[in-house]
Amino acid sequence: MDDLAKKWELFINVFINKGGYNVVLDGLLNTLKIAVFGLVIGMIIGTLISMVKLLPQYKKSARIAGKVCNVYVAFFRGSPMVVQLLLGYYVILPLMGIRISSVIASIIVFGLNSGAYVSEIMRGGILSVDPGQMEAGRALGLSYWTTMFKIVVPQAIKNILPTLGNEFITLVKDTSIVGFVGANDLTCAFGYLASNNYEYIVPYVIMALIYIVIVLIFSGMIHIMEKKLRKDERHATIH
Amino acid sequence: MQQFTDENCILDVKNLCKEFDGHKVLDNISTKIYDGEKVVIIGPSGSGKSTFLRCLNCMEDPTSGSIYFDGVDIADMKVDINVHRQKMGMVFQQFNLFNNKTVLENIILAPVHVRKAELRKNKKKYPGLTVKKIVEEEKEKAFQLLDRIGLREKADVYPATLSGGQKQRIAIVRALAMNPKIMLFDEPTSALDPEMIGEVLSLIKRVADKGMTMVIVTHEMGFAREVGTRILFMADGNIQEEAPPEEFFNNPKNQRLKDFLSKVL
Ligand SMILES: Nc1ncnc2c1ncn2[C@@H]1O[C@H](COP(=O)(O)OP(=O)(O)OP(=O)(O)O)[C@@H](O)[C@H]1O
Ligand SMILES: [Mg+2]
Image (cartoon, rainbow over all chains, first blue to last red; front, side, top):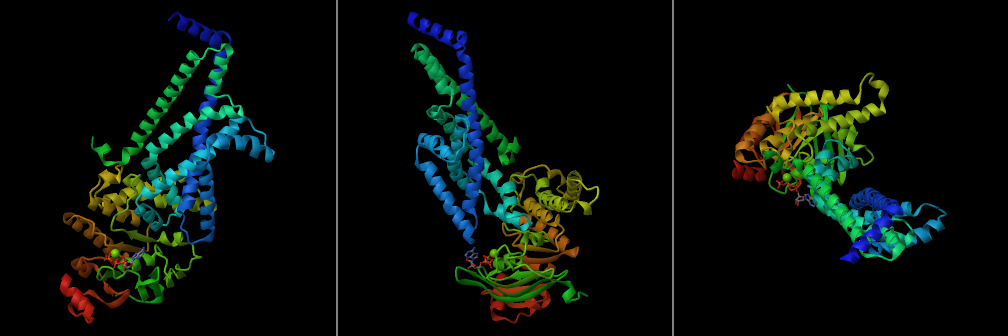
């Protein structure tokens, strides 16, 4: 017990007196940035891919675009995220002569990666919407894309929100690998604190707790959103 | 008396053919639909009634043939079909109200969208008009339509809470909100409980009486006789017989039609 109290003191010393909290705050911010922006990019890319893949196939351009999307999805689902991150940051970006911070690079890789997963989820969601909804829109003279974005996609998103929530939570946890390209995230920050005096217990337990709290907060937010989106369902209006 | 001249021909269907994977469903159909006509299509299941109706606004692309609407061949793939569909209302068996929109939003969505796009393209033509004004005008119009069917108090609810009859009546006024030149109905009462059929048919009749041009696929023979000005009998992807209701029902000539009528009447 005495031992633990001492370890706690050591941690507090590093965390507060030596300014460790700055590193942790920076790490927390980066973790959130990479997860949130990654998901936003992923949603956009995923929605676009899913719609390209659902395009009527009678045009050659649609078939080619579909093939390109298949390759994209196969690559991002078929290789580990760390590999994608390393490839992106140390190979592809330098080859293209682009210099960006490791956080931005992580956001892009996470966005591209989650785009592949979201596209599959979204495709299922769009297919789950009654085709009559698209027909009604088209019959009123709305274009395919207008009907898609105003009518079909909102209903698809409602249907897939729980699955999408899981994808986001996976994304949040996966951010813990960005240290591989030198980005300071939550995991890096606590690793840095621990390496200060080689006392691991307290910082790593706190780190785990913080991840759990973040995930719980996001789960709660997703749940609230789900409830809001279900307002157009029958049972919601009866009571 | 109704004049059938080229000037008031709304739809001119010429040699319409439709195949699904090599299977011929519509076999060289030609007919003209004139302003104010109420054309009712009847026929056995699988005869191609829905396919024919859906070809009229190119929800199904014809395999060959032409469909002239406003003098434009809308079967031509180069035509911007959306512009023409805006003037052709369609009512489905399954209602197809937008589930994620309230009743009011269902009605104003398309008119507001179309007018907004028009305003953006051609600002000079509409001095003083704003998006806000468009929305207000369309809402006002939607409320008038809802008043006509006695459903004003449902403006802010979602379709999931409505009865089938209410849904279909709203689907009809949603189509009317676009001020179409013609309305296409595909078995508008087939998915309804019997006690709700009457309210929908009487709304269609009221719209018909106001002079709307209509093409209606239905199994309701009494309604066909009452509202139709011309009845088409379809079988095997063809129009086998067409005549005004009196003659059609009292004096059918085609043997298939006689058999069909003896079964359904
Ligand atoms: N999308 C499609 N793909 C393949 N075949 C189709 C398609 N739509 C219709 N068919 C076929 O075309 C034929 C005509 O169908 P259609 O729905 O037009 O008949 P209908 O007269 O409306 O019948 P019902 O009274 O049952 O509604 C049927 O044999 C049907 O199987
Ligand atoms: Mg049918």
